[in-house]
Amino acid sequence: MNVQNLSDYDLHDVSNFEIISDYTLRIWFDDDTEQVVNFEPILYGPLFGPLHDLTLFNQVELNQEIGTLVWPNGADIDPTVLHDWPAHVDAIIQRRQK
Image: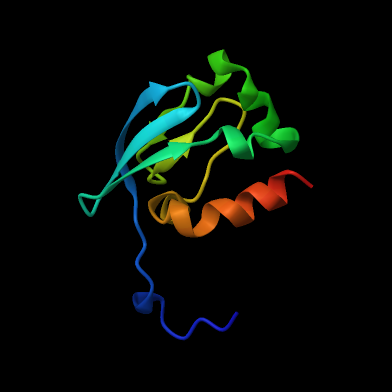
């Protein structure tokens, strides 16, 4: 990928979140938008698979320094991917299920 100018890309940070049901978070961003994200379909593999343990999943925190959500086992997702979740979720699911 040839990136000509980073200013051509909108980068976003997570500003807040709430757990609204099992594996589902409402996430607010620095541009005053929000996404409701169900993470259950991507909870596969060595990093995200352990988050099937709801106790671990619910330990999610906002790391303000990097502007995204993090879990105690080191899992995190790029905040811009979270912001544009509908555009990325299918590819993430396919990658995680391999």
